[in-house]
Image 1 (cartoon, one colour):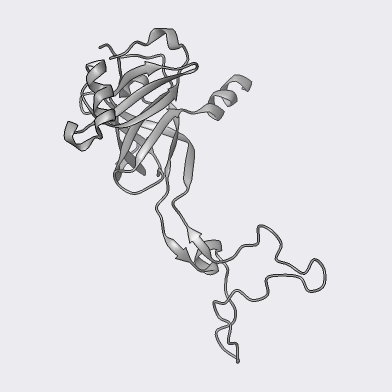
Image 2 (image 1 turned 135 degrees about the vertical axis):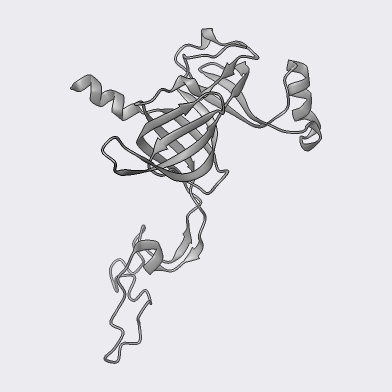
Length: 215
């Protein structure tokens, strides 16, 4: 059950935001993430199937619990498939830990954003609204939304009121500020999607690597 360094992605949970001080004394906003360890459950054509976060066996359905028992692994809450660089280096029972990253690395973090329910256009699309005085009765209303005779319909993609949030979001190129292997904590500069305890996928930044190659 060794620490593997050939993967580029790990699962984690958002702990919350705090701040640290840089060498110049400036405040840097950071997010703490409980990252891993993830246990390898099996291999597919291109990916590695991993499990994350301990859970009691009676909290799982019998078929799910049976899979872990057959593999002789402790029950886990989340099961995902992760892309790796070399699948041959993995075997069932191996652990992927937070030390696949180091301070100074850049990562992309994916998760589900906070759901805000049904919202009007001013909050959802940042409309400025109409005049509040001089006889205006619109204020926060949507106003005209379509053409008249041609095409006689609302154009597809028109910004309107509707469901806001709860979308899959990826924040790119977040700098790793600290890696705490003992407590499985990853600290990154800036904000990540979702509320506390949101499940996250953290991978080495793709676009940042391309930038380095071209420099």
